[in-house]
Length: 573
View 1 (tube, rainbow, N blue to C red):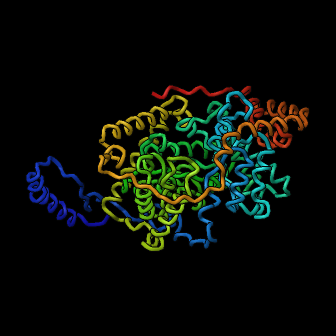
View 2: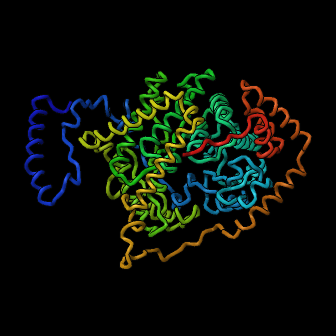
View 3: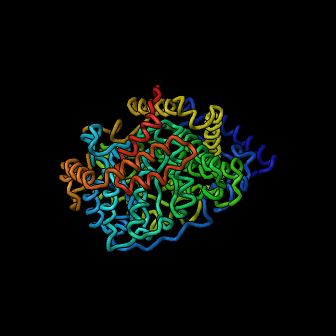
């Protein structure tokens, strides 16, 4: 408690006098029915306890920060930030992306896959026509992975780099390719580092690149968790993604509740498989919750998220190691539908900076957000990337943001809002729990409908002007200017290559199919089919056998479609 009862009574009396006096006269003067802004006092934190609600950085419940201090900056060579290993990318064929990454001097991969790959189709499948290499690279066989990773040759080795794979339904197949490639290069898979996304539940909720029904899909995740825990100790097994749920239209509380409900289901998979929670949970990461332009709400959301996860792990799952209570990879995602407009795109830089400040004030690092021209295409300009990175540098080195951890701790408003967001999140999570958990809530279509409703209301507010978006639905008169940059740095990737990417990929795939041992391929696919029928079998070794025989991703997914079936989505509204 911040104040004793006597002091609270004095504050309450003073507030009542203020409301009936000064505030009332001001409202009457301007003909207002209620204040246009709120005021918070110690009365809003009557029973607040610092150690219970916040604690010191790096201590339970981790509201301020997961660690006792910010991690030190890592010196970077000139140009390193521009071509950071973590930059999400993938263009056309693997040859195209390999050449691009070589030119950039990358030392790691964050791979964007095209839609056919994400949905388990080969490039020569009629369903894939027109989509090959369009929103990422096409990966059909181990050969594609081998060619892609030639970008590391002469730079570093697999065991000294990290790879992230934004893939979900066929994640285990991609992971098998990574392992098989490492073995061919003489690298022990136990030394591989990286993060496969592998979050299939949010695909059902928000993004749509699912293939199989929820139960067999969860089995695939279980196989990753158990195999990875035993065989790949340095590789994360999942990246639980609130970002895409928020981008699909969920509110801040919905995104956290749905994401944590999904996470609970994934943790239960590991426990049901006989693993100890402290054994596998530190290889679970989170891909943030995205962000909005509601400055203080985003500060409260980050703080509440750390607290909620710590309590889930400590109280529900009884994790004993304090490191297991820490949410990993929460980050400070400030991009997406809230911060990116194609109208006056340079305004996106300002939006990103505002939310970067919010991130710094909530315990994270300041971020410049995505490049301002992100909505104009994934292959955004170097100018946009430079401005975004410089914005983060200015926040940190010139403004000194990050020198104090969680500087708003104890704020009457921020603490009240943090408690409010947490309460709303728990309320939604409890409702999901009453339905039988995340999988059941997804199967009934409830989560999908809730996201659709929130997205509808958001868009309705934008279109009506109730929610102001500068340059989009307000301040759009003839006297307003369209501001743009005038200098363009040449990009080493030739966008014309994307035009014939499909043709080139089809030729490569045909060659692989012709030259491989097709009898061996059929034998491995047959073994996969048999194993898939037994839920107790871990399919990872079977995927490895298929991959090493150069079976295609589509061939393996078709075997699983035959056994598991395909998921028919429940109506959204």
